[in-house]
Length: 140
Image (cartoon, rainbow, N blue to C red; front, side, top):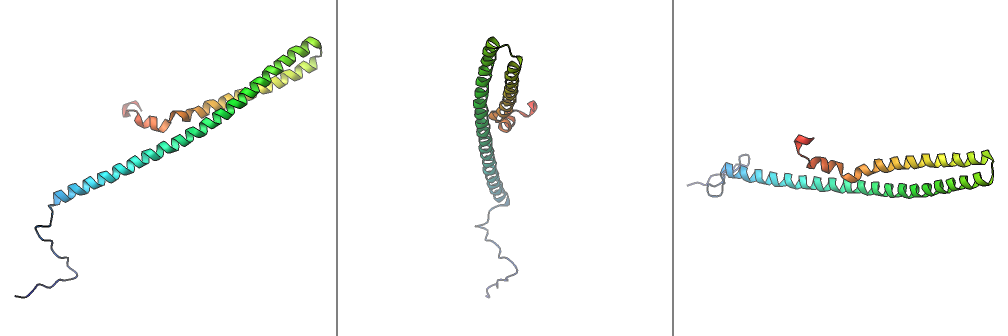
């Protein structure tokens, strides 16, 4: 009896004892694909959380700097008001009072600008993308 020759162009047939049924192979492949997809999804969520934490940190630093500047400007306004009162009482020169009032108006304008910066920066402290993803689809 002659041994069958292996043809390099034709793959060898698997033996019946080592082969799995198609449905079992497909089930294992589906489970592996599901596991890979779950890993990628969790990585994406952690990456998104890290990016939003970084953005929240930058917003917090911006708010702190703007808050410090706001505190300094409020002190300048207070001292300006006090200077206007003192100068108004000691001297009746209208031009000096007007100069102090102009400085106070500029300081108030800067305070309003800084308050706007703080309000805009505070939005990112709420983690907007993650909180939107956690809401049910009916509320979006």
